Image (cartoon, rainbow, N blue to C red):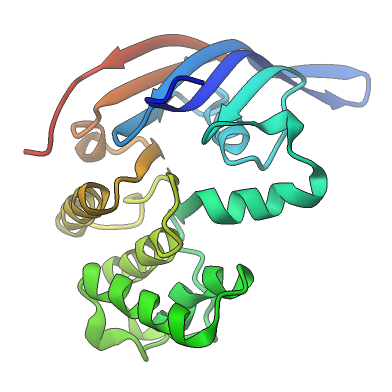
Length: 235
């Protein structure tokens, strides 16, 4: 895999078997997603973009073709090691935030580091720094039900970035936010991208977020119909 690409698909197809019916979700997709940029996966419902993101996130395996993520051939990573690979290299941001309600904001950010076996003092220090980076240093003890939607998404971003992933996958991260809060979240993601060097890959319908795209991958009927490189920098 070229050093400047964090994800490479080579003729990737995915077929789901529903009884005797074969349903193609992806059909012969080849693409390269560059590092340290804002890439968008666009397409109508049922186009295959969710399947594509699941493949990138190592949550699903292709029926055929080869996938490289963060310099590794995914097919060569054993079942025993795939969860650890995902935990170390990939962060996830969801439109519904997916915070653990019984944990504080700080504990939610700490959680991925706990899974990695990091010592308490180190993970606490790193998590506090991430909360500071997203502007929530004073909200560390608050539980999700005490936070606004924008604050919850900031916690989710901190959680995704705290382990220093090479790649962050964001599924409609502004879908449940008003336009002003969404703009603030987009600006925040730009800043943390610049600071930490992570690559962001979004699935979105939000025109405001799409306007910030540096690479656009358009999917329709399981096929890649366009890759457009915008070349935009942060305004």
